[in-house]
Image: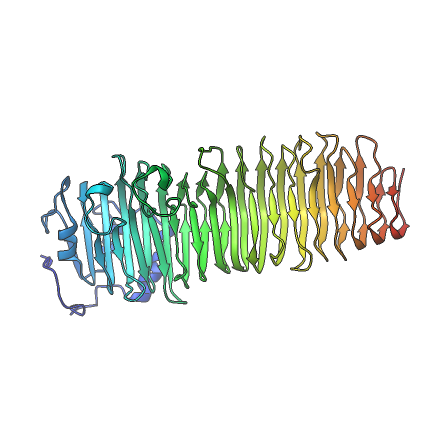
Amino acid sequence: MRDTTPSTDSNHNSNTSSKLGRRSFLGALGATAAGASLLTSGTAAASHVEDRYDRIIDIVDDAGADNSGDESITPILEQYAADDTLLKFPPGRYFMDSQFRFTGFENFGMVGDDATLVPANYHNFDGPQYRLFRLGVDYDPGVDLRVQGFAVDLRADDTGIRVIEAEVTDGLFVDDITVVGRHDSGTFGPGLFNILSADGKGMVKRFRANDGGAFSENAPGDIWRGPSGLMTSKSHVGQLEFKDCELTDWPDNGLYTPSEGRVIVNGGRFANSEAASIRMSGHDCLITGAEVVVDQQHDENQNQRGIRLDGGSDLRVDDTTIRLEKPNGHALTVMDDVESAWLSRLDVHVGDEVNHGIVVQSNAGSTKITRSDIEIQRGGNAIQINGSDAGAVICKHLDITGDAEGYVWPTAIRSTRNNCVFHNVNYNQTGDRGRKAMWLDGVGSRVSGGQQTTAAYPFVVKGSDLLIENLNAQSVDGYEAIQLSDQSSDVTIRNSDIERGVEDNGCAGLEMYGNDTS
């Protein structure tokens, strides 16, 4: 029989032969991510998890916790939590009316099997009204933490709480957490996770909170604006992966990572959150395989971006769909504090409300936009590139389509940057008589290849030292393919099929050769 009494000695393990080592544990995290659920009692996978711990405690059978939802389990958790300990939650409802705080631990886990956590409402929650589980703090973090297999019931009025706040140096694994009911307490959102060691790693997998949260003005709590769904803080410096998570309708971002570390968003769905459904800072970060949607608004929603890249370097968004059916914010914004970004294999759709697809702000650094489709149904820019000397923007192998109705922003791509590159960028936007393909300012940009078909002038040029080559451009409404303003200079156009030629309004230095202008 296992010893189920709490230990006061963090080094109490006397036999480690049957327990996986720490590095084996971390390797197993990856295996778990690719494998089957560990929640089914009696399976080989479940036994494999149990082999990592010295002490396995069934909190009902062994510790006497109430699983009917009547009595708080916090005292039981405080009594039995220890190093090298796994707490198992059998089926039932587990009431909590105060925070469970456990720090400085090594190798601690809580695993539920059809287990539902039921927090007290905001008014009856004792002590800090912000968290159910506070596992590690920045000055006393844990190492090797597993939390898995819980539903959280927020359906009662004025409920809503941070389910897990975890700060560990390494070895975080959170899986299969489902929050049911709207977070209407005005307190912290359901999850915050930090990896506090630069070489530490963690994963948050299948964390679902799709009923969203209320703005604080409509709730008893008083945090600014309202909760975010999942987040890191600036203390995060390691690597953290959010895999197949789902977050909908949060008033202060869906997934928010204002950190210096690496964050990976792998799959998942993120929808209808204020500020952004995904808002990311960090270094060498990645969003891949995600679905981002804005198709609902509340009266309080003022700016619902799809993705907002806030700051850091080497931020990448790849193989991701962004669909804005009721947008009041851009699909994707590269903010001023971003040093470098790469956007690839995106499928961007902006529906019947006017807004932009991709916006690169004035001080954002070098940005690549490649192999992507952008559909604009109303008159916003597909790509807007601001500023001048912050860093070149490279656009390659893009298809820009849609009716683009509504003469609000008349060009698909509008750029004021120097030294930008546009290669094999195809446009087909003929739905509005004023629509143009590209408006170029700045110095030293290059345009090559691509098929541009628009209603008005495909190209409007205001910049200097511009090369256009191997282009195929036409206006269905009978305009010249290229319009040069009296602000433009030193423009070279060569080896291009430019229907009806060039409307030159005073370009200082135009060189043309090898073109078909019929």
